[in-house]
Image 1 (tube, one colour):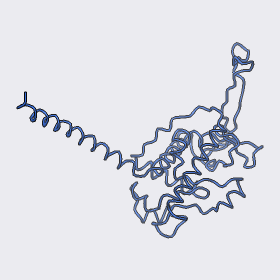
Image 2 (image 1 turned 60 degrees about the horizontal axis):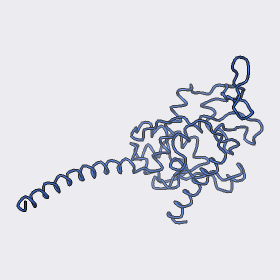
Image 3 (image 1 turned 45 degrees about the horizontal axis):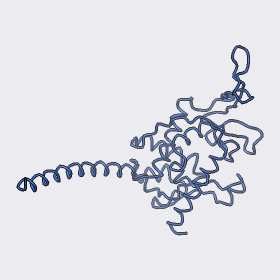
Image 4 (image 1 turned 45 degrees about the vertical axis):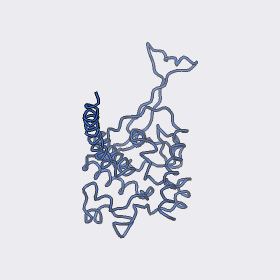
Length: 255
């Protein structure tokens, strides 16, 4: 398969995943991710989380390991700490799982995440990774408040811990609050079953770093493009002034 074919396939998979997610969403409020793709420490932390917890099922086929030098890592650091599915830094960040294995285990092949942040958005990814809960009725034993009945298990559960989702009627003066359509207003909250290795603040920071890395991976040259755009604007401003003075100089003898 050519590189262009891989790009088209990865984009199609990400957009398809986004379409399926939109169809399954419950209207759960999105939390603001607040990622900063200029923070190299955050990107490095996100890369570490990705290869340790996500790479087993999801790859970044449109990015090579060597691209991680752009976030401040040396080739030696990449080889020693991050390069689990390749022999050379010039190879793509591909998952070891085949599409056939993914379909057998999860019912659908896990999508490549090269452009998932561009397809879904940082806030969606951040909220999604923070709203898993235990559900014995699903094949994986996990469910998600933002994306109900998703086939993906909670791969970060050891960090966040195990939680249950409790849904109750909103009460006021001892009576359920009506939703105006013959029903009642429901409120949902998470209840901790077993704590993870991280506090809530630490886990949120880890997820934010992971999302920041996925945002950067979706467009690794965005910072250079933004900087170039600023210089282009400066050049245009100077060109406007030069054009104005040229106009005044040209017409002064004709008036």
